[in-house]
Structure formats: structure tokens, C-alpha cells
Image (tube, rainbow, N blue to C red; front, top):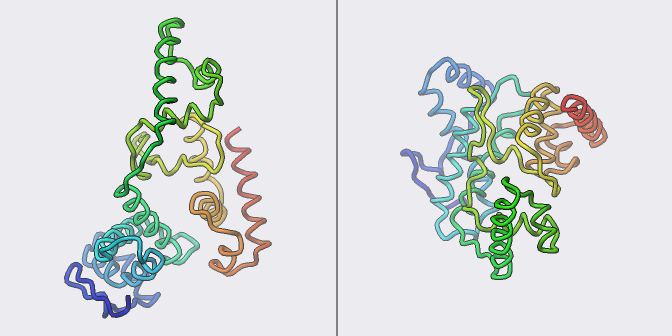
Length: 257
């Protein structure tokens, strides 16, 4: 990778300069004041972040140039959304966004095959759904359909979801004129399915806790980092990470009750 040259926006990635912390802060101040030339310099001065992320994706695609450009899109999103008040370095904030953009690209450009048995179950579920809707004058729940089919509710939900078109993790699902809620905001690590009101309450609660607690929770449950990884990244002990995570979760539970 070190010898591989990629041309993008007239910048040769084999010869990229690295910005100092002082210069980075100066450029962010200028960009937030409307100076677009500062944004260009921020992009060019952080391209090595994209290259470092690409190492973990080598062998996944034939053309690394395409993946590099996708990574740059993630970098630009990070620059646009980075808040100088965050208690984290820009690189810490940007890398997960670059990784997310690349993973989205790889997923959206891969062929997903649904097994015949799942499709058959989905069509049976749709038939039962139509019958129950006609009988009860309302759409049935997944549990009601599952009982008629003598299947688990989870299996029915998975089968019905298999017939839906694949959408991006960054597809907007709610916008009240302020914060936009994206599909990625509602992803969970368990099998529970929450309604939109609960997801909105969760997002509001996250915005009310301390920034470091919010960052740790998002990195733990959205990105999937371990407490040990976060401890090394932030520069505090694993016990402190655990305490901050526990405190943040406790506050969120109180806020959304």
C-alpha cells in the first residue's frame, strides 16, 4: 500500500502532509466560520487516516482506488460533523465514520441471497397477514402471524424483512426539523424491536448525558469497541471506562422512563 499511488482531487496519496494539532484547530475554526479553503486543507491533511483504515480492507475489493474515494467521503462527513467541544481527538472521531462508510459501500455493492425456505415462509406470512387484516379490519402483529404459522415471532419478522429492499445505514427515517434520525441510530445488539417514539426518546437521552459518557456508549454499542480498546484510545483505565459506561446507561434509563 505504501507504494500504491492514488490520485484524488489532484493529491498524490503517496506524499501526504500531516497536520499538526495547532494547525488542525486553526483550520476547524476557519471552516466553521465559512472558509471552504480550510475544509480542503483539512481533507488533504487527513488522507492518511483513510489509508490507515484501508489496510484492514485489503483483499476485499479489486480496485482499492474506489475504496479510497469512499473512505474520503467518510472523512468529509467527519469533518462536517466534528465538534471542537468533543473531548476526543479528530482522528478518534473520524476513523469510525470512515469505516462505516466503507462497510456501507461494500454491503450495498454485494449480492445478498435469501434462501428459498425463508422466501416460502415470507410468502406464507404475507398470506396470513392479508387474511387477518380482512377478518379484523386492521394489520396483524408479527406475533399474531407467528401463532397462526406455529413459528417464532423472530422467524416471521426475519422472513418478512428478507423481502424488503436493502437500504443504507445512513437512510434518514425521521426529521423533526432539527436532529435527523438515521437507520443506524436504531440498530440494536439484541432481538428487541422498539417503536419510533422510544428510539427518539433514546436519542434525546443520549444528547443529555455527558459527552464522554455518550461517546463511550456509542462506541461500545454502535461501533462494537471493547472497554479495553476505549481505555487505550482515550488514555484512561478500563475501570474508568466501565464506570462511565455504567453511569451513562443508568442516566439514559432514567431519562427514557
